[in-house]
Amino acid sequence: MRKLGKFNLKNQTDKLKNLSTRVFRSTSLVVSQSTPYQVIFEYEHAKVRHYPAVERKFLQPLVFIPPLAVTVSIYDLYPYRSLVNYFQQQGFEVYLLDWGRLNYSHHQLNFMSFLEDTIPACLSYIRKHADSEEVSLHGWSMGGLFATLYTAHHHSKHIKNLITLGAPIDTFLTGWHGELLKHTQKILQRYPRLAETLYQGKLPKKMIQTPGKLNAFVFKLLDPKGWFNGHKRFLQNLDDPQIVQEHATMGAYLNDMIDYPGGINQDMMLNIWLQNPLKNGHIHLNNKLIDLKNIHCNLLVGAGLRDQLVSAKAVAPLCELTSSTDVTFTLIPGGHMGIMSNQNTAKEFWPQMAAWLTQRSTQI
Image 1 (spheres, rainbow, N blue to C red):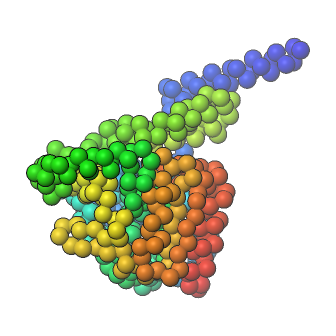
Image 2 (cartoon, rainbow, N blue to C red):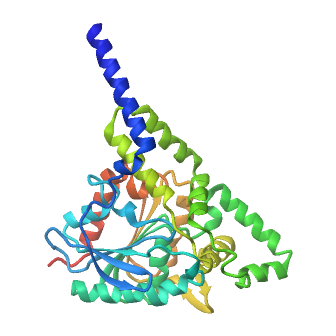
Image 3 (cartoon, helix red, strand yellow):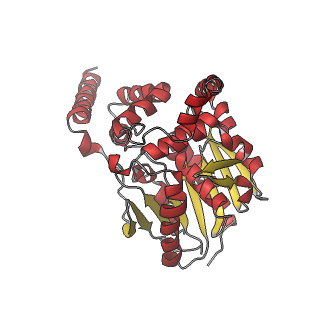
């Protein structure tokens, strides 16, 4: 009994020590972005990171296109569970676009700023750097929309494989907030002048810009259960250094969000989410029609089993809206964030995704 008492005392001491470190010195616990990389290209606010393959096996490089608001640390979250490192190990040249620290000076940026300017410039440099005419794109959340709309807008040129995860297509099917959006749209139809002001971009872009702190708050608000469960897991495992590190690392990621430019909010929130045009397979941006039927490349569409932000029903319609003949749809363990980073995703989905991409890439 005495030995047990000493053990319990040490266990409680370790818990208090870990809790103190988490509260007062949390930055010392953050382990994200530990994989070495090189910034090979800069274009205005954006940068291209290169993570070379351990042993290159495939001609087409894999390019990760992230969403806005979040930092790119989720692609290299833990040393033992890093998406960029995983694909390095599989033999792919990996490139990651980093949008930088956007602020109010970038309020005019919109979807077409990325689809016609930033992404084409970055991909052109990547193709030269990788010595490959074709690339494979991976887009998560808004990054999935960027990748999808870019591929459609440029008629799949240079895109051999397209992977989209948690990217909303039919926004009205994405849970309770989808129903709220549908109801809001019906109300706006009764007030044409208000609808015109909202839909045609007449609101000042600075007025509808959202700061990073607000984005962080709203993201947690949309998935309170996931936020609560994360804290619960941490408090129940204070004696586990790895879980304490993971909690601090994820906390740093979720709290360090970046502004949504006003032009992006106009396109994403007021046009894509509220008007829901993509459910019909096309969208008008800056008076240009982008039709999803212009996508012909191999397509992998993924949705989170417990995604509270973008449900599987909201994601799946993409499978029927393109001209691709090779289309795969899969459900992924976890919620909106978990489909990128949790342990079950890494164990179950990453090998599945790598196998899919391996079968559709040119071996060297």
